[in-house]
Image (cartoon, rainbow, N blue to C red; front, side, top):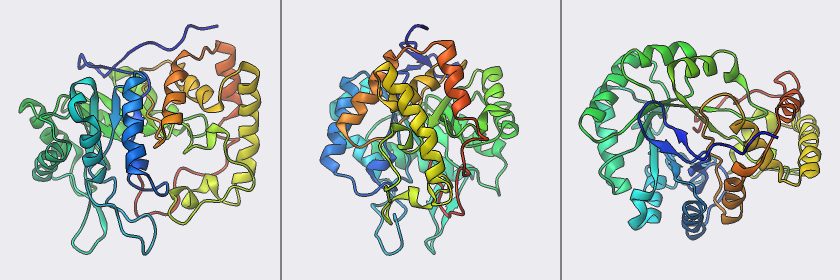
Length: 342
């Protein structure tokens, strides 16, 4: 057996290190049905107590209505929630947030990478988070009207001003990553990556390794599919984002569940939860990786934190990789959506 996952993960070349598993907080504000604010706060506290110190949010989480006719929680909702939850424990955590997605005057979602907006968004996030610095500041989604070099240059200015400690990008390809890294050090790349979503392996991960960029997988549990809790009778409510995604569609879901049955059998043989095995597979990859599984419940944040102690052999990792090759998993990453979270 290989040894358990490393205790800490370096955040690029910044000198900052983070827990090997973080907490994605998006679902505490929108996209996955109703959340209980008090339980969300308890979950954040339980995460810290379990050794998780890497927390991920965005100014946009809460800004988009979950479904037609349903009111949004409000722009900045998730950041304000984290500020409330951290209370006097801010210095115990490494806090990541994002900018660029916002609502236009006519209510459409747009992506804004203008240098002047970068500064405005950062100041607003600092106020909502009730903090004097953002540990990791991500460019959430690219603005097609602004060269990435201009946006990243403005982000580097925030580092120079002491408002931000490190900068990152989200969901970009290898070419954009290289362009950005030529302007300023990029500490982290956040992209969807899991056993059943592996698009970044061919070109993006090698560039991250070459440039010393930490990979932060969002949806590392396949939006809970890899926890093994769904079956053929599972349906998703109209305010649940998964109802719009190809992997969960009626055309693909039953097939994908059969693949997850293989993961469940593998996990049962080893005495761990399927989600813990899925996280351990990520942590066994040859990169600096810190997945951020999202949850809004204490039970699951504790289960996820314990995945750092799950041992997998090289043969185990290879077997899981063969089970979930991209050719075997049906359905793309997103459907035709106006808002693509994370």
